[in-house]
Length: 244
Ligand code: ADP
Image 1 (cartoon, protein in one colour):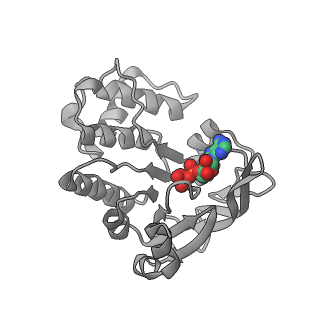
Image 2 (cartoon, protein in one colour):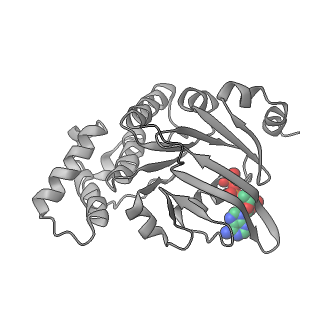
């Protein structure tokens, strides 16, 4: 569809903690369907920005607009129902449940007041597991999953809330090269199914391959935003990563 409306708009966002400025006048529009990479050295404000998008942090007086709606005052669970999902760097599954039961909990969360039967929950959860390549693990216990399966399940739990925007927070950290490719291919596939994705990642090759645009933060400020090759060639970005 021909539309210039961003899916997500952040306007002049400044976030302070006791006088310390974690984000300094950050404005950014994310387009529907965009594959967007968020990079920056440790402490540059990436997690803070994600918390402002997910609703964990208040952002007033600056506004956050999602899908044409001002969501600035909406709490996190309501933002999830509007279509913003976040996967955490450290997976937080319910460890006593099977994989599919974990997914059913996430399905239940967004089906909200609809009275879905247990079978409906199970069917929807199974569909997500198939989409995520985890169907064979549906009845496995969470504790028996490998690292890469856990990461995929964490993304699956986010997908079970039927997001328009998926925020992937270091889903690849600590994985082997081939596992990184697996998760990367999965995220690229989801983007192809018109999910907008913000990827926070330290593995540069992965962010480069994934992103249509990359934004680099340093000390709470945007120091570069644009095509991956341009951002990587940027002298300030290179300095930030060399730690000078
Ligand atoms: P990144 O995710 O890029 O590593 P963060 O957003 O976690 O960076 O942190 C940015 C800065 O804000 C850091 O200096 C951090 O100490 C500070 N910060 C983040 N959250 C809080 C908080 N809740 N209270 C105080 N300071 C915080």
